[in-house]
Length: 419
Image (cartoon, rainbow, N blue to C red; front, side):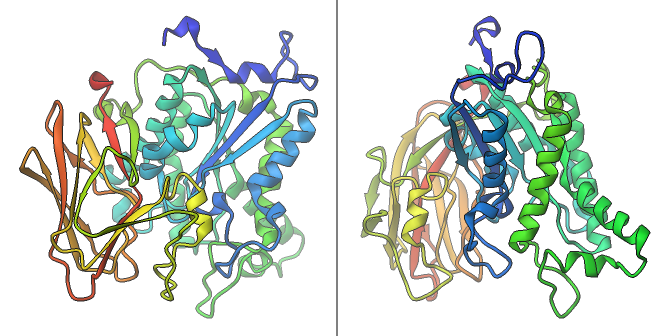
């Protein structure tokens, strides 16, 4: 779309005179994307939060309702536990931009965090920058460009890991600064509170402070999922930042013609679409079964159960999942013009491959190797030849343990010269 025809949602938060427009009656859609801390479906025990009002996203929606009392607010929570920004970028169009949001909060600082020193090398830096920039440039391509806020959530890591976490945040900050996107560092705010307490009372240790908000294990480490009070803690950090300087966070970001990651122009400018498992674009060979919210897949194995609620979330299993039992030899095919594809939500026991062919020629292998339930959110990505081609996934090498293969959808990625 031509730049002159675009609208910028950030402008709607302010009057022509530059003041916060608290009398606006325009509907407001706010979206959240990140990992489990954004999804907010679990507390420290890994179970559903007993009070959904303690999810930081829900608390923030309540704050925005008070800030803009006459604007009907719709909230979209596209947080998904255990996922990082690479998968976030791949599902960003479907799970966030399709709702035409005015304001987006992005949080992947926890799941993108380096855990080893070698993850802070140049490749690690690139991985943490490329997919964040991809989401930003997808926003730039929208007809209505949303305001964007990035949130560094607090995590209770030990000091050695915290140093690496900070490096990961710094990598991302370089990209955010390029686009002049406001960043809320809830981690810094939480630790400032700790330092304030300790300055007045030296008996306050880091462990004592964190144990108010997180479960501490016998080895001294903490569960990354907080108590409800922990979710409230960083919700208030975000609210305080928005209250202090709304213009910094709600104004349109800078539309940079050149990406920050110039060496990865291909990746940061990819556009994505999905083929649900139930799509008539896909032809199945073998014994496949479709599961939906009305007829969910349920098993006694907690590692493989997909409850009915999960089917209602489009970023997890849009329009159901397909499953085949005793899968070796089963296959499915579809036609595409995409430059890359991946198949998230592979779910089976370990020891199973899906060989991928384009027009009869092998182009890659998708491996299910997890010893738990083989959930693989992000790929691998498989590069395809140019033009229209027939793709075939053929399941092979299933071990005796790998008796089930299921997936939710295919993600197609298109380079900018193929959009």
